[in-house]
Image (cartoon, rainbow, N blue to C red):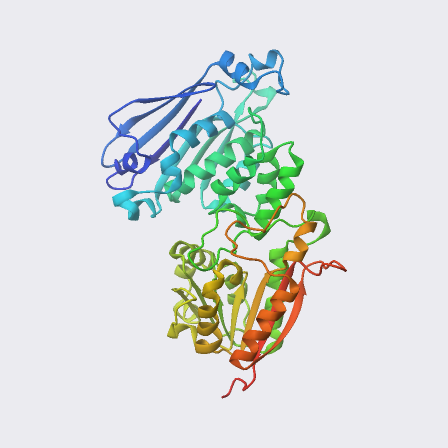
Length: 470
């Protein structure tokens, strides 16, 4: 099976640097099911192409699968695995290009972070659902897609098309993102994994899909197919995806989701409910200028920008990469000068005073405070309520009492959370902040509430006592 990636970036041989594979050498990598080879059919300043070829050994593949495999039959030895791109190629790609997938560029990090023109070709790709599925999966990522069905037999056109396509992707993309997309989407299109799936499969999916999966319109289809028969894993993955995108403050760029919520059919994704609740409070208060503190990849900012009532919108985050994602989500480069004037994105940390935080009617800290070390909370309070002093401050954070209702959750909802408050602890903290900085505070729950344990998310609405005009 074969996959090629080409670029016309100048000089094109930079592709070898990004992949950490020298264009002048052929390299071999042993896999449990065969041998992967990496080489460059062409390598000039104008165009460079890398090829990943996987030679599958059917006997080794059968032995690696074992008798526990659902395909323990003659199909182990007679199948399309040696010829068609599948989960086998995805596994080989992940291992062979592991450094490139991480986005590390060493002394050329600017190159690794920059989109470059790329062309991906896969001559034979299993595609359950036909070419239309390939378009649905790759086009939202920014690719121009050609998915040509391969006939069952050229000599008998009346037999129709096979389940295979010839795939060609073209576009400008970070190489790391491209490799991670292929790592996930090749087995999704094939919908047949060759190996046993353990609990770490969800983590693999989250790591590879961190930069693009949470906002993909087909994320549920991708998750369902990637995790196959593992229903419990699918529920956990979909729950984590529903929360992803709230990458927050204090040097946090999570590779995992914020929390695990109950079964999908019981409620809207909690992330969407939080956005709706905070948005409505801002509208009810008549706020015209809003700053999202810890805006992450810009999900909530996008909602603010699309609301005409907010004449001035800003977002700040400690992560430069998150701000880049936010700018792309908002399509800042495509806006007219007049449209762009009402939007501001800037890099900053909430534990240090910044004049740019001031001058807004309202500030939002959505799922932020729990990412801050308790010893640094006082600094955050001083910066937001003491120095910036907006008329309205909205804070959301998990209700730790609710965690016992989450299937498969042991401990806190996200490994980066420094703490999670009970309702009493949240009440005590919000009363302390309100008293210290001369605000009133109202607390509400967000999400489906339990009679005893309360709602999954807690929200505090702080209103400055002296009002907007002082």
